[in-house]
Amino acid sequence: MKYDFSDNIQRGMLFLLKSDPDFYSQITNLVKPEYFEYDIHANIFKTVQKYYTEYRQLPTDDFILQEVKAIKSAREDLADYVDELEYVNTLDTSCLSNQEYFMDIVEDFAKREAMKSAITESVILLKEDKIGDIEGIVRKALTVSRFVDNGQDYFSCVADRWDRIINRKEEKKFATVLPSLDRSLEGGLGIKELAMVVAPPGTGKSLYLVNQAVRSIMEGNNVLYISLEMAEDKIAQRFDSIMSLIPQRKLKEPTGQLDLHERLAIFQKEFDGRLVIKEFPTSTATVNTVRALLTQLANYEEFQPDVIIVDYLELLRPTREIQHEYLAQQRIAEELRGLAMENANLVWTATQTNRMGRMVKVITDAELGDSYGKIRTCDFAISLNQKEEEFDEGLMRAYVMKSRNGRPRFVVPMTVDYSTLRMSEDALDE
Image (cartoon, rainbow, N blue to C red; front, side, top):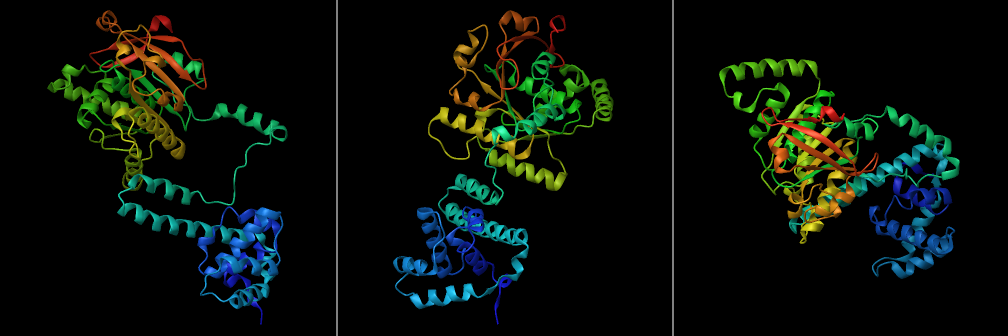
């Protein structure tokens, strides 16, 4: 009686591995020797891999047995390998008529074993207090797939490429606070992007981010605002004025409270976007903390943000401890952009300049505080520029420091209403 191929996926893989070059090519980077339950199977797998790597063809059973002698343990009997190969060779392969079905089974096996290995390794790392390393291991296990993107064949993909480029105009865009920026970006920023606002302390980074959040809500987007410096209620009070146009000093008055509730009700009815504000203690949260929050919001609040705002970059910790501050900030920027790509949303953050930022007329990347590497990662960056006399008149200038998808290095005049905290583009210059 022949052995039913579908009863044991591991023996089935070995049969195809040593007899079908196409199958070998599809699984050699998917399956690892340690995924096999028995050492005999793992050693046969290693032997086939080694031979194919060296000679670009599959080995015979005789060669497998010859090579196994060098890697098997002293406790193992070569006769067991002979019996196992004979057993594998007698498999009933009639079920292989549907190759795609079997490849799906192999892929599921690889995913399961990869996750088991990741969990085992994570337990060890947890005991060693290397929590930051766990994320990468688990993430790698989750990406196991036989469908690998090997890039674009340039000459055969011209039509498809331009079809994507032309239709990309229909992709979701996120407007900024300033219309001139949106025009340069052909409508705004896109998903999977990281945007950054740069300014000296006290110049308006957080205020810009709140205005940006309101702009996104008015477009019908869900916004998650993460504060690492100010309390949730303080940030919410800024939103109160910007959304209702009620001056800060009047919010606590009875008439101001009445007007606030009425105007926010109208605002919420007019625009579909939702807002969640979450504070974390300064320098305690990492991007993994944000990931955990996203999971909780999705599970318990049915809330999935289109835009994530992190106020601000320097107050996050990298997921791995890094001694040098400039490397840490670059790492945080990279992790934030990775977050945007994972969740297909737009991430906004802010960062501070060095001391020269207060002295120059226009802040460029030369005035970035601590780390130039953080701006290399982002897709879009503006600086907020303001002299004392401009502050007195409620004026400010936004300078486009970097724009991957639009025109960089130009200035947009702005106005700031410090009573309602609303920022806008100077109407005279639109």
